[in-house]
Amino acid sequence: MTAAPTSESVTNAAMRLADQAKLKDGLRRELRERFDLDGDQIVEAVQLAASYRLCRRAFA
Image 1 (tube, rainbow, N blue to C red):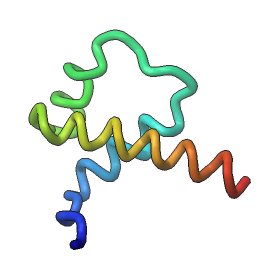
Image 2 (image 1 turned 90 degrees about the vertical axis):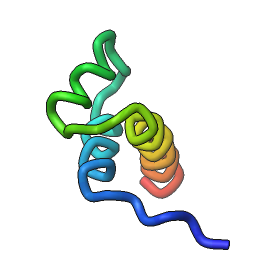
Image 3 (image 1 turned 120 degrees about the vertical axis):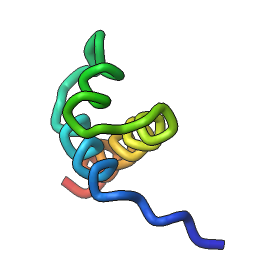
């Protein structure tokens, strides 16, 4: 079973989140305004960002 394709805006949001040292308050609003994401996409972006951070630490 393969994962559903991730939209480009979710991927961009995840990369931005992965670059931040800490998630800040108002994150949902910022992602809605900047990347035009809905609630499910925001959750997906946060999960993807955590995966990016983990991979960076593992392979850095």
